[in-house]
Image (cartoon, rainbow, N blue to C red):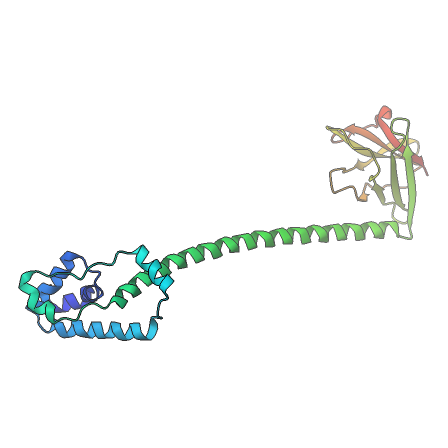
Length: 263
């Protein structure tokens, strides 16, 4: 290795800091014997590091110093080969502050990784909480929209409310129909109907000219017991709701009639 190569390799800096391996130290000292002008380069590196340490390194408190000494093993100054004693003796001893700086950098790096990991976990938690808040706001917006729609139906000047009372099959059941006399639209409020058994579904019927006409299936899943728009038709003489198999039936099951009312 020639003079330029050893300067660019970074071995001189490791040598000054006292963290070069035994093999690297021998290599540097061989080059010092071969190229005496490297001693000037070594002294410049040492001077630069001292100036940097004085301007940037804060004085460690006793706790930090103990913490550093516990994490690293301070090596004894390197004892060179006998043939190199003359050169090495003329070199200044490696200041302890360099070792302190190197150890502090390692500790700061470890703490930086820990802090980054901690901040990342907090970011994930905050993102999850934000997503939950957004879902809640979306649900509240949906509920408000549904409530506004229901109020529009109930307060519509063309709406004719019809209360469907329970049959002997379900005497306590109640439902309400809102029939729009200007458009023939039909809305149903099933909120007071009994809970639907598994595999069953409520179906609305309109009695038109004495015949039952399918007015649509009623949704009774949790959260959708609000007023629902059904199929539209002309003037009806009566309305009824039956409990049918899920998906509906082409004809009403009379034994499963839950509520009914005449217009």
